[in-house]
Length: 254
Image (cartoon, rainbow, N blue to C red):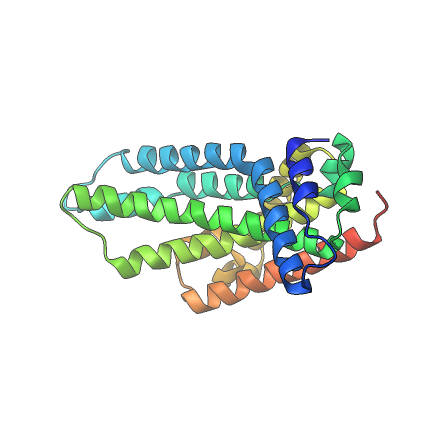
């Protein structure tokens, strides 16, 4: 039994506690358990996205282009967006299927919470981490540009963070669904990446290439899409994928 499992078990409220308080306490401990399991990869993701953006922004500075514009170009080029996509998928991996492979699924399932709540908390933590990753990228771009005396508009920064967050949430949801089917986290990550590559390939060779919302990288760049449309589309994808994940998780024997 891991330390996080033990902490979760000790902190579960007793029978005399009101249901609302018990649910809140259980959710908090499940979130803490998930955080303990993912904080190392989250820290690596923060460092990786910061490095990717700084490296991309430092690659040349065309004449007549402001520093802020160059930073935006660096942050929204293919390398920086690809790094974020890979990291969002990594943050979304991990489920009871992986715990079963590690031998700890039995304890988790013994906790007085439903499988749906386990999935919901895991997804919520992943979305929060992805949003923090997008927020760091936005703050980094704005901070460096401001330090150079060429501040970025607040509206542009918030739009950037929102677009990356909703796209990252959809990616994390897909990774979570895949992880329910595949025991090895890294194999699950690879399968998710390959599935995304296949989807993008299909978009490029069909009429879907004329639909900006079908191209994840185009949505992240805000090219031809509104924030409201992007949010609705990516949230819808995440909701459908998580519903499928719940149906699979509910029927699976551990």
